[in-house]
Length: 208
Image (cartoon, rainbow, N blue to C red; front, side):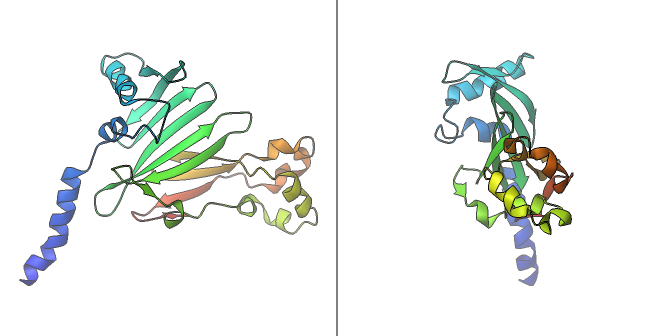
């Protein structure tokens, strides 16, 4: 009996691994409400073109052309328009299922990203149960945090834009609001850390 109880968790994990959905299936079965720009038929078009050795593209609901620029087992990227990109990344949980992370980025002069998380069936997962997003202060150097002019920087940089990218199972955050300050940005530039803020997935949460 003890042996049976000891192997049950392994059997559950093996079952979950066998039944884990692949990214192609997850993307095609995405509810239209999650990414209203495409219907299921249009999402399938990306793969029809890709499987034919052509550019993976689809006509979106706005009449423009969107192109899938990357597809692999755990991530896909789509240039939804000239000023937008969508990334869908799978992070494996310890039980063998996948957490879906969707990053939607507006590619203006200063990129801005929004993240959302889902289970494999596209039920939403609250972001605060998975990650604590960096604040503006997290990007600042010790010099900046001790400077009397910090309140002025905070006042001028109210937009708090961040760009997010997924690199080898890591989410990288970069602060992108500084350019909106204008000429004073030159004065504040060396107040910000050069390296992005990285969050590693441990199977349950993203850890900085």
